[in-house]
Image (tube, rainbow over all chains, first blue to last red; front, side, top):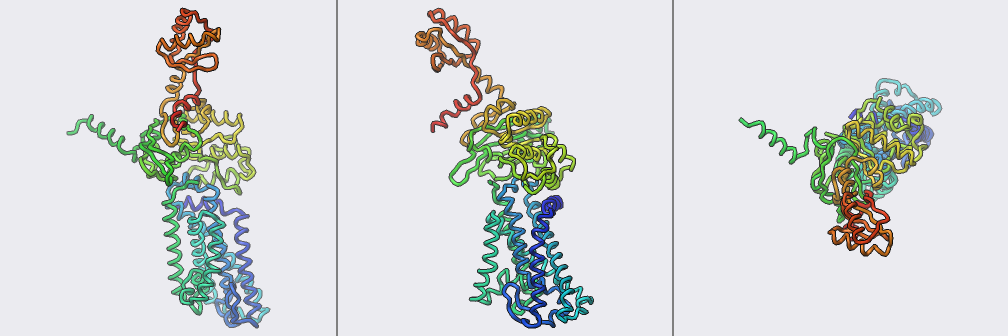
Length: 265
Length: 326
């Protein structure tokens, strides 16, 4: 597994790849953070589409307030994770590099899980970068909006930062796994990304409008709740269990397809 | 007590019945190997056995089933029927033998954003091969000077060489190459041919698939020939080429004597075919002097009389004529 992991990282750890994916994630986290502080005084409680409900000054001043910005951008970050997994996996089929990978490492179990591990560590790394930017920018913006930062820099504040980072990392990995199963099924980066975005952002929103009880159990909503540490509609424990179920289902389906399917292209 | 002879018989029987985990087995073997895609039978009951060492040509026209067979040998696709073995291991467990096999499958593919050496480094890490194999493989294919260039900037020929370098990475006992000279210029073809012969003569086995029969004629020791997914020939190239020379070309000095010459040959009981103002007779070359004597006795002087060797291409066509006609 180590061999697969380090081989994948040799391909991922190129400046173009790192910056290309990390850039948009940091940008969305930055936007979420800035919007939170600018909306705190006048727009608290308002629904802002994919950026969620605007937090009020009290929420921002709470111990976990300095990481709320990344929660607000969690759907965007999740979609980027979906695209990272989908692109990496589907391109191996599109370009035919899956052949040389399987010839070099014929153990499909090791190849599959080594690749997932490498991609998961990559999305955790870029999420860490986004979390760091969120915390730093929050510290910089708070004085201008009269938000006290004492609670952030206390032990509960640091704990909330780490727990928040863990939640959003787990949610991001599961977004990625959904991208992975789509990529292995369709063997096309474009189709898997557009199918993922189409379902998770549009179709799921429509279902939620017509059947709220179902909508709160669908992946994008559940993962958003996990990333935020629970929401008004979905408790954290429910979000965690459903998210893990989606992650496990994605892994099982993708693995079964991967080990059974002939590599003919 | 079981006599030692019986043990040998038992072991031989086990070897014949199963290709699993017998490390000293043949380089390649197939027994009724079949692969169907829907209604299409891409490989149809292929049976052959090739011992280790030397260059084995795997020939057949485009669409004959060569790539499908190679993919089955490499564990990329599962056979629909039959079995095959690589280095004595069954193809159902490619992990058992793939660390001793290097392969190039059809047109080589890489990560274009990485340099040539980084492509190889990534695969060396993946396969657990020593890092020093990377410069060695690049040197063997003559790419050392361009190793740090991005693959996206490589020419078709350079990509082909890099594909062969990837196949050489594991320092393989068996090299399986699918059309390795595609895209190479004549000098590159000769270079790769020499490299393969060098590898083959070092005790390793090179299994090279091509639709260019002249290429195989120049570099192979043994041959597996397929057509429409079925085996046409498997054996020593020398054997088939020897048969190819079992013909005599004869041309009468006077074209008007051709019917009489044909009559002489037919009376002697040999098959023949006419080619312009000459005939090609199926007979060993030693029969030439007898033919000359018979022709002269019938008043036919010969302008030309020589052994006729057919090319591998002619042999292939004559062996598959029935299939082609279908």
